[in-house]
Image: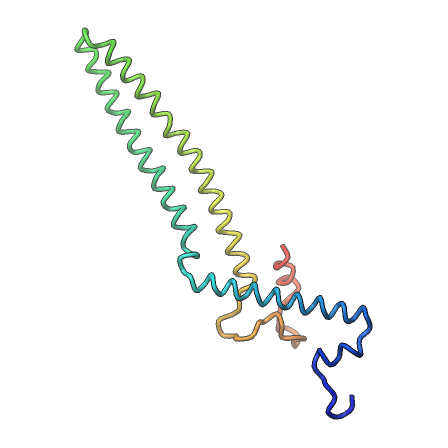
Length: 170
C-alpha cells in the first residue's frame, strides 16, 4: 500500500469484492452484538439484585412449602385430638367427626400447593443455571479490559479454544 494510504477497515472497503465487503459488514454487526451483550452482562453484574433475585425467590418458595407443611401437620395433630375427644363425648361425636373430616379434606391443599410450588422452584433453578452459563460464556475476565474473543490470532496454546467457542453456541 502506498505511504499515507488509509489502512483502516473503512479504507479497505473500496478494495474488497462484493462478497468480502458483505462478509466484513456481517462481522462488524456481529462485533456490535457481542459488545452489546458484554455491556448487558456487565450491567447484570453491577445490579447485584438481579443476580440474587432468582435464588432468593427459590429460597422463599421453599420456605413457604416448609411452613405450610408444618402448619398442616399441626392441624392434623389437632384433628386427631378432637377425634379422640369425640369418643368421650357421645352427644357431640357426629358433629366432631364431620368437622374433623372437613378439616382433613381441606388440608389436601398443602400437598397440591407443594407440588405446584416445587414445579415453580424447578423452573427457577433451570433459568438460574442457564443464565449462569450464559454469563460465564460472555463475561470478560476481570483483569482484561479488552474483549478476549476479539484479540485476533493467538499464539499456540493461548486464546480461545474451539471447545470454548462451541460452548458459546450450545
